[in-house]
Image (cartoon, rainbow over all chains, first blue to last red; front, side):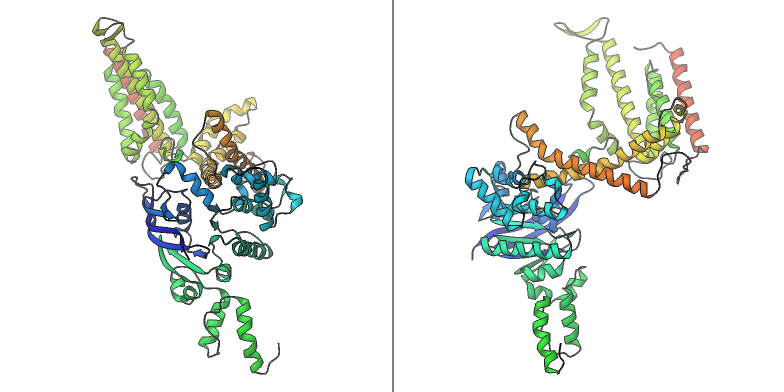
Length: 289
Length: 270
């Protein structure tokens, strides 16, 4: 695998040179491989949002370099827009960015800016709508007539339509109902699998992260505390708790069972996995479920 | 960014000036404007400047912020003073073509500069030390007599304080929306004026939508708390005049007296 994004010791200080100076991100160095699904976690104010906004050049790091396919994205500051098409960014509550007359036009906004037109544009828009489950019949409606969840799908489709190499999602499921979360998450996973796009998912919901991420980046006070395989990160429950984070609920349960002498393996991260390991145990004890 | 501007900002604190009655502060500010334009010679100008300096020191806010607040209008100050410099009458002390500098011109320039600077400093002192809520409250109280001619004083004050309250919120929102549209490749910087105006549409539409949404939310929240206008409402923080305020008024009157005496005794410079 080759490396798509590389951060070389990047840092960012808000209000440099004023009394309100604040170090938000401090010396982050890491490499992200092509096609990876990365989860980003950290407590509020840990620098996650600032960090991801530096990936597509919305924020210019005050020190260090961001390399996209081996090239510094700030090499030519005037061409920073090209970077934004390649690193797609979906903000928190993206439904508030919609502005066009129709859903179709809004999804097309980024792709048009990128320079797509004609059939290629139409295909990009319809594919993106399909990925996020925007109904065909909604495409000609005004985005302001949709429900909150539908608007969010439109907004995410608007970024996917630019066909970025890296897709960054900042809390895409915040404020959705459980069913909506579930569906949106599986749509993102599906998109990741089909297109092979590198995905960074910022989330506060450990269950979501545990289900989808290959690797997890844990941010704490502006520094990357861990950047390891999902199982390895969630095996360090105590350390996570010290940072104001936690492990998925089901992991806490199986860990507690194990401490009490029940023979369950470690690193159980999802409910499905837990069912797989717990059911045989119950059967062995002669109980039926 | 727009947020860096110190002019009109409020710095919470507990200084002598912070604790003055906001109504008194507004009245004093109005009187101050009158006084500053009644200064006709350097002695009276000096008295007003000293009065201003005293208030600035008593407000216990770093002079750095006062300087910063002047940055915004620095150009206007320079422009008017330079203009006045060349508009004097009398014998020229330096001449180049039709441009001439006279003592009268220099005097005018100095006066105009000092007056504007004092005015800005005093208004900064007012806004630095008085929270927007206190200010609108005070304005409401001061405008109460207008009720006699059916002017909706309370409603105007409520609208003003709500509007002020949402300025930072909307600024923050603008930043967020701009970032989101930039992430979709919106070009905010380049292009000719028409393209630039067009580039604002993706920012303004969501901003207006969210402003209306917020307005509805606020209205609902106010109704839920049984808000029905100003009639019969009392205040959580009632404002009272105290000895401090009286002292401040006396100080202002002394300044006024000083200015008048100087004007009578010393011939005017402009």
